[in-house]
Image (cartoon, rainbow, N blue to C red; front, side, top):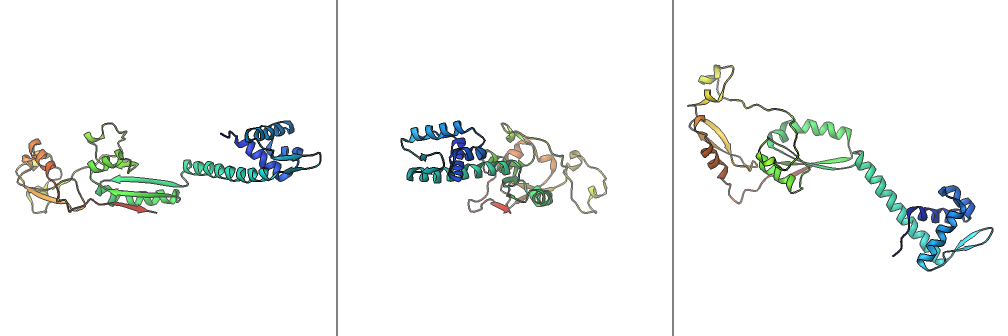
Length: 242
């Protein structure tokens, strides 16, 4: 197995360009003796002579010419890898995938993504429109890098940070008895029928009319969570924002 450092590869390329040991050392920042030893060690590892030396000029053998060509390819690829990693670290290129619940994906995220793209145009953004449980599942499956969703027990084992608080509001006609109230509590909703979203697949939401908010007890909630959609209904897929 050939064990060659990038320093040796660059020294070999410098020697090919200069065709003289003393001139090559000016390009690779090593002494002439160190350059000669590096080339000699490389020849020993390969078991072939790579250069013909004389006082005035260095000539590469046929095997040496092939080795120089290979060294150029390897150094170029290593430089490209290094550049790509630096670009990625600086957010000049890459990809990030977000799983967000529909309300955030439709209203809060678009202007935020627009601002992000203005700062980092080389980074593509993928977006999953997903219910809370599905959003966390996408992160666990490594299909999404981050989830924007409501806090819940499904976050166990995941790192999470509170971004903001959201409020629930009651929407009703002005003629409704609650329409004249400036502030409401859950107790105020008791006895009033309301519409509630059920299920976790929000690509085609299903709503039920509950006779009273007071009836939404833990047992009723468990029943709601067990409701499933027909197999023919597929969840909304990923969208890509270039």
